[in-house]
Structure formats: C-alpha cells, structure tokens
Image 1 (spheres, rainbow, N blue to C red):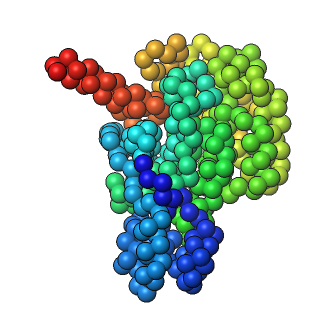
Image 2 (image 1 turned 135 degrees about the vertical axis):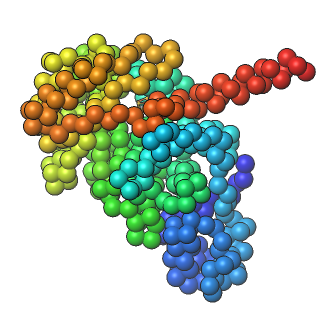
Image 3 (image 1 turned 90 degrees about the vertical axis):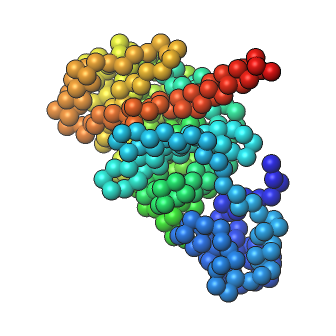
Length: 357
Ligand code: SF4
C-alpha cells in the first residue's frame, strides 16, 4: 500500500492549498477538478498550461490509482453489481442501476457493518473498517471506467451504515454535489440510515446537501428491537422525533421510509396501519422491499399477495408506497451476497490448490 494521499479524496479547498504551497495560481485547482470529474481521468500532463512543478508535486505526493474490479455481474434488467478490491485487499460492492435514462449508483461506505440488522447479509461479518472519502469516490470513478459515464443519482445504501462513518461520508457528499465536482443536485444524493439519531441531528446542524432515507422496517419497539439491535439504543420514539425535526427544519423536505417486508414478522395489517400513521405524520413516501433471502437467514420473503395487500392498503390510505423489487434479482441481489460468493469461491480454490500441492 502507498503512503501517498489519494488525489480523489482531495476537495477543492485542499487543492487550492496545494497550489498555494507549490507557488502556482489556484486556477489550476479548478483544472484538476475538471480533468477528474468532467473527463474521469488523471491525464494531468495533457491539461493545457499546467505548471510542471505542480504536476511533479502531484506525481510525487498523491496516489492516482484506481481499485481493481474483481467481479462484475450483469442482470437481465441492466443492473450491474461490481465487487471492487481496495488497496488493502478489502472488497466492497457497488451497484449500478440504469432506470429512466439515468444511472443510479449504490455506494458502500464501510467494509462490513457494525449495526447488526438481523435481515442483512453484510451484518453477518461485522465491521472491518470505514471507507475513506477517496475510496467512495473511487467507486464512482470505477463506474466511469466500466460504463463510460458518471452516475446521475447516488444512494448511500450499499455495505455499511453511512452515518457511522460520518466525516468521510460528509466530505464525499460535499464533493459530489460541489459545482466543480460531479455537480449533482442534493436531491439526487441520498444517505440511508438505520437510525443513528445523534448523527441525524448532526447532519441537520451541518446542513449536509443530501436527502435522507430511514430504514425503518418495524413500527413497534418490540419488533424493531428483534430485527434491528440499534433500536435498543435509539428507540422508535427518538428516531421519529429526529425525523420530525428533519422535516420541519428542511423546509418540509420528505424523508424516504424504507421497509424490508419479512414474512410473519412485520407484514400484518396492524403493521400496515401503524406504518400509515408514521408515514402520514412525516409526509413520507414508503419503499417496500420484499426480503431477499440468503443462505443461513431465518427470514423468508412474504407472498406476492401479502406484498400487494401491504402496498395497496398504504396507497388507499393516501400514502405513496412503492414496491421496490430488487433490481438484478437474477444476480446476487442481497447486499453483501456477491462478496460472500466470490470469497467462498476463492476459499474453495485455495483449498483445492493446497490439496494438489
Ligand atoms: S442493513 Fe445497512 S445498517 Fe443494517 S447491518 Fe446491513 S449494511 Fe448495516
């Protein structure tokens, strides 16, 4: 691993500081941002009138490499799931979802996750480490390499709890929404949280330019405690108070509620009624996500009839609720599944090799 600082993790102000340190005009900071975020490249030597001493400084002190894509699964609906190997050999998933002429990228914020949601495959391995801003940006740059374009929507819904890695995620959000960065509208950058209440208040205080989604998944503390251990620390009433505050401060901006539907756990008519009340109170729309089964999980996916009943009830009650069938269901659809499969294949291969030696 290199000890150089990753160029992709440097924001505009830091690039301006470097220009000043090297003794060249700060206009070159803009040129670097243009080269990286408009063209998706690192060909700094081809930038017109780019000072040699700044080029040398960057070549000597910054790392411009991109991580390796070690697996790329293509689904029939156009979704691609990438497994990206970071410089320390840690793998993370990133999903590219084309829809309505726009590309959405689901970004991972951590290697693994500490939150421990019972229905999540990523949770089973625990947290290895946070990803840096540069490593999140590298996921975006990998998309440019694979598809030749940048995403127009970013959702922080991949591996990890984004608000558990607040500093790096906040910098990433500022960089992708910066005029000289990807210039995405804050509406098009969504952070999804399992309910880290203090971090929701911090996000508000910092006025982070993004939208918020909350992975709610239950409407009583009793059920939420069972499937999301974080609820024992930040119970529903505290979470909903924080969500109300968000909506009132952010000018009635809506919070998206995500609801993983688990057969026999949170899919009754009483659950639907309580969810209706919460969604109406907050003016939220609801994404219903029928559970994606994975090996070893104790949960099952509800029948299509139950899923329809749940959605129709909410819609009839005036709540916008959409069933999000996992894009790419013919590939490893559950978050963390591709990583698990690739690692299992590698372990089998390693075992076979050891046996033949
Ligand atoms: S659902 Fe999200 S927050 Fe919960 S364990 Fe999985 S990655 Fe972590």
